Image 1 (cartoon, rainbow, N blue to C red):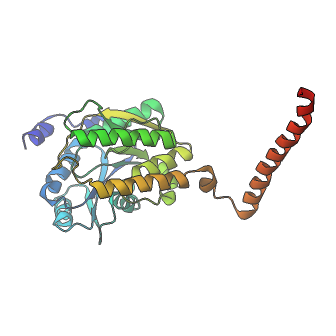
Image 2 (cartoon, rainbow, N blue to C red):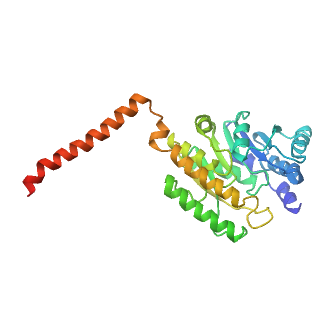
Image 3 (tube, one colour):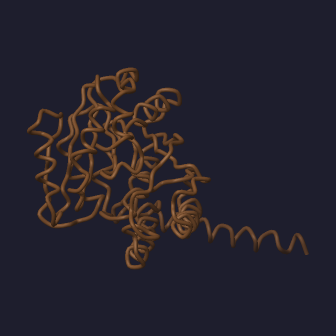
Length: 289
C-alpha cells in the first residue's frame, strides 16, 4: 500500500508522454480477484491524462475476478470487463480483448503488474525514437528478484528462440508490450497458439509482415509463490511443443501458403536447378581431369 501511495503522489507519467490518440490497455486475468481492483486503480493513476481505456479479460476465473473488474468500472474508472466462460490461456484472452480495443496504440499488461504500468509511456518514447511498430519490455538480466530456476530456464528458452527465429530480443515473454494497432490487425488472424508461447508467434508474425520490433529496458517485480510461479513442468513441455509448431508455421513454405500450381512450379524449379547442376558437373569433369 505504501508503494501505491507513492505512485499517487508522483506526477502522472502518462500526462507527459504525449501519446497520439487513444491508448487501449488489455489485462488478461485469471483468478486475480485478491489484488485486481487495487491494480486497476494503479494503472489508471499511472496513465492519468491520456485518452485511456482498460480492458480486463477474465479468462475463466473461479473467483471474483470479473466482479472486481466490474466494481472498478462502476466506480468511474475507464475500465471495461469481458469474460471468457472457460480458461483458454493468456494469448486467447489477449486476442479476445483486441477485438474490443478502439485505441490507436494497444498495450498488453499482466494483471499482477509484474512490470509497472508507469513504464508504458517509456515504451512509447522508445517507439517514437526508433520508428518501431512494436516495443517489448525487457527485464534486466541481472535482476535477482526472480527465482534462479526461472531465470535459467528463461535464458535457455531465449537462446532457442534466437536460434529458431532470429529474433534479436533478450526477452520475448515479458507481460508488457506496446503495439501500433495495424500490427495486431494483420498478425492476429495468423495466430494459433493461445497459451505460453503466443508471444513468440505474435512477434514472429509481426516481423514476417515487415514491422520493426525493439526492446525497452524495465524493472520488474516477482509476485508469484514458488520457484516458477504458475509455470510448471507440463506448461514448459507444452510451450516447447508450441514453439516448434510455430517454427513450422512460420517457415517459407507454410507462411506464404502457396496453392497447388505454385507448389508444383517451385518443386519443378528446384529439381531443374539440381539437374542443371549435375549436367554442368558432367561437362566440366573431363576438362578438369
